[in-house]
View 1 (cartoon, rainbow, N blue to C red):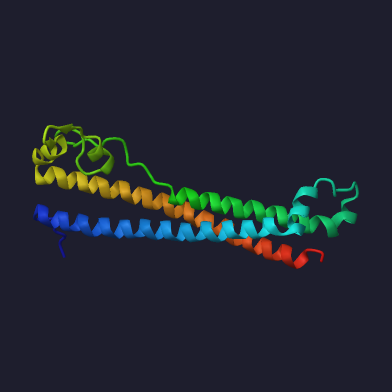
View 2 (cartoon, rainbow, N blue to C red):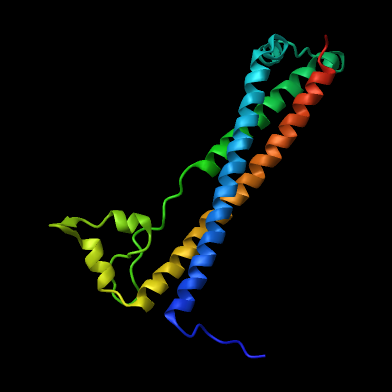
Length: 194
């Protein structure tokens, strides 16, 4: 079986469109999951901070440590669990925000063949000045060949895939810290002296 290259620019454009949709859906999925993670971890933090016993454990941890730690174990475990769960949940919420935060595209992508400003990345498009009745962007697009635009579109796919990879890695960490934070919070609820 022999592999064939794209025969036409329209085939290459169709490939780009499918890939862009696929990557964009994954970016939207990462943002949605991060929003849900941030919502639940922030809610858990608010719940914990409303608990009087939780606030007491957090604020008095240092004062409760006697010189003989073996005597303090019943007092220190709830305080340590409270502090640890709050820290983990806060880290998870912060990482979730980083996933949702907009990513900037690479600096002005230049066309390999023209050396001019790119016409596909949104940051490049927005940087074109208006000139008279028509935008210089329109003129730049019309001056490109289909192959040049296809190459820029492929560079755009690559940039989007890097954004997606970054979001997914940070999301994975946010979900891990959130899960461990929730488990620690539940452990605190179980070991908290009533």
